[in-house]
Image (cartoon, rainbow, N blue to C red; front, side):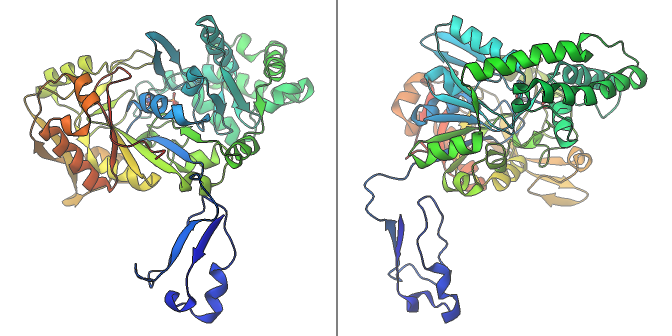
Length: 495
Ligand code: IMP
């Protein structure tokens, strides 16, 4: 239990408000001391009778447009977690985990499962059972026994959702509405969730419920696909086939003991001392609420999503660390503006960075567009998710460049702006104000990682420390290469 020692006089609270601070509060709760209280007020806060620090949560959030290299940090910091939780998205997220030279490619299974942790797909996820079982199967073939749990409240991606995703993208092809989705059916599944016509994982357990849901929804979908979009529909819209296949997934989930009431499951894990790591997919600027709509994914990668999408309270997420993952430059897969995109006269530089940084989509293989670091975008991300720390990746990719700059602010309609405007049209009109930075040269990055932060080139540290100042959060880790040992760790968020 948290205890607080103080005198009422030192708090300078009126008598009728003194009740506010009485009583006990469970560990992890944040205590806000009124500003009238000075540092020397004699107030003491601590853990009564506790010898161990309280168990924690760490939430990993992409600060840009996805592909910031979150996987490497989830992998590293997941070691101290007992449970790794995905709280949004589906099989549109791609990451590779390398363990003892063996490569594991994942798009849905939480990456902690590769290291023997329990992985949970929270209620905020959209789950394609085909992908899930395929990934579990290939992990088994590689000798692992992954422990994956799926929230009964999560929504199911059905085959017709993929058809809709691809059909709508094709329809938008020559318009500025095109999103450039991964084609995995993510958006249409969230649409049905919000439209209260979705199928949840728990519905797969009861064939009658599953059938009645599909008998309502599928004829509508078929009619839209055929009559509005003019496509020929196939087996993806056949209720009997769908019931047979998806009821079978339900059975497999039950038989393998994979189903959970995720909120309660995680609450119990946390209460009994388990460390939870929330693994955000995608990034802040493609968040459905805080990203550059409509070029966004359909869920909330920002830290608030970790609470809503897993069923733990926001106080639990907020009591832990929230680490923003930043790539030292910018890349974008898919459509949408990119004010700091390298222009035609910088095309060679963009190619160099793309090749060196392996900037090709993990799920789709598409080449990514390349831009300079956009700091207004990062300020936006830090505020939306309350970053308590940062990890900056790919600083090795910038080594040896002839010039190095970043966008400190934008000019928009004669005004200087330090954060992102709310509409995508305004964002597209932003002109970046660049700041030049000293470049750094190639290093033996493994040696740098082994030696620690001070072994980074001074110019690189200047770049990182500028970011710390602008985002008001310390850099915990610096990615200097793709291998597991190529991370300079200053501090782990579990400390
Ligand atoms: P969706 O998530 O497939 O609907 O795609 C919506 C937008 O998010 C598209 O611009 C995608 O390219 C982008 N997107 C989705 N997942 C990722 C990811 O893991 N990394 C980067 N971009 C992504």
